[in-house]
Length: 621
Image (cartoon, rainbow, N blue to C red; front, side, top):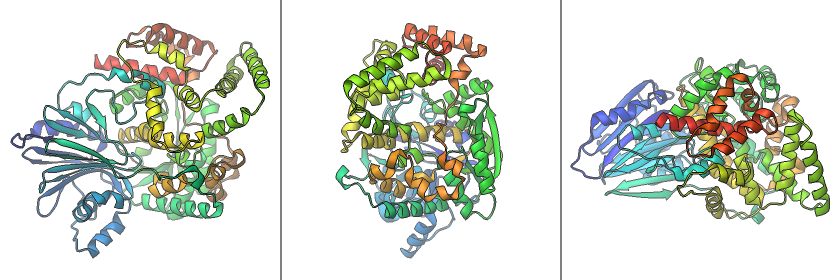
């Protein structure tokens, strides 16, 4: 796990400035505290910061081929590097290190661009080929590792994080046309960033930069399958799923440094810990973040798993006092507005884990791969509810609406959610989807984004995304979006930035591409039989866990912002937010803050999005 950066001047007579390259690389020191290295040859320069996890003594980068014509900088891990190294040896290659970086280099020598299809892992790498004067950048299939790029004044610039590109100089204006998308999603989806002229390489894509031109290509995508061809051979699916997940965990436990696991107490992370326990001869180090607010606290469940699996367990409680420190960390490490508040506990658990280990396995990706979010149940329930006669639906909505006006506290919040479901059940899938994503109704979102500049609307963006999906059932369209957009641009971005902020490597067994390809082709009747979420995981790994874990209702890994924001210490911050001028309507913000603090509505997570946006603007001056 590392940080990479580089410059390629299109003018071959222009030499790379080493001071600039060093500056681009050094701002990534948190991603690689164990060493740095550089390759400069005329108009090409590559920089690397290293976090040593595999081959601690001889895996330094940039790594150069024996004939000096190839140079690679690599961020990530190739988990099947041992098997690939054996295969390459049979093809005549000799190895001087025990690193997966050398496997990447030799694989490119052997298979060219096809090397990407051989890798099982997470990666972002750049290979300079002096033979044909080309730069080859690749990002892993699901987007676990980031890479950003820009073209400025005849030069191609890239880096693991946006700050690396900013360190190269040049002025980048804010992409205010993305405000509607950010406020709706809480993050900026690829290929966009919140800077005009800086882009994210899409997951499963690679770039070839040659002769002053960029060629963006796809090397992997989700399986092209129709709904009628979805698999429903239940037992065989379970057998394959269990085999793939076991092997995925085993591969991701390859390490030359101490490792552990994030353990939330949910089914996903608990299953990963159970699988690790079967492999490891030593107790697994496990790490949990909890909250004083019981509705958000899974420490009790995590302890049950830790005792059952006999791990060395460590926990910490997140408190409102962590708010300011977490906000500053998020502004620095994400470089652009990122409004998913669960970045706060991910940062805290990463810091806790780094005190004892250098690498962790996580349960991230389970909800996407297994279609396990409650939104899948909601979509199925919507279909059933729409069969109820319209008059009965109208009467029920009126009754719930009346009750909402006469209650407060938790009951009010629950009734509001029911009211929202009843209201949205009559809308189209995309309208329902937009409302759920935005945490606010579409009309209020449009009023909130009052800036005069033209906007890329969330509706247009989603129409473009779903236009690439060949599946028509809302369940499968939701599955497509979660794997293609929210997983890489929200979930994995959060884990990467917050773990690397503490120089901690995070590995995600559920995102082995074999598991993703298998699960994507499984019929929804197998994934969600009789309203039971994560049926595949419960049937395969559930028997290895306490029954309480298998039966526990889903708890999102979120922050009790609603409870925090009603505390006096946040009153001034909320007033400042509601009156601030950063492109959003102050009247709408004022109404949101008042509704949240009075207990009429729960806008805590949405207000966090606005906090991040405001402070990001303040930082830019």
